[in-house]
Length: 115
Image 1 (cartoon, rainbow, N blue to C red):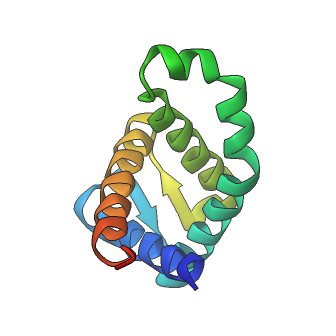
Image 2 (cartoon, helix red, strand yellow):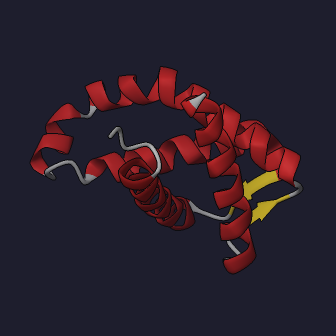
């Protein structure tokens, strides 16, 4: 259930970011949901491999390189989705990765916190 909520939260975040920044284009809410689903699959399969391969640089940057890995998975999602979900460049993907991390952190601390 938490996974589905995360997909819809990311889809809403994609729509919100595309409304504020011109560097992200989302065709429709369905495209945002599909992109969020693809991103979650990539985060389960590709992201752990990227973290493993880049462990030394992640260690040297005290974990900040994880934002770069998240941006790369967003760019991969962009290439899979085609024209329905378009990120203008790596800088926009990096900004999205930071914003998504902050929103997910707030949600983890407030909504999903076990009492």
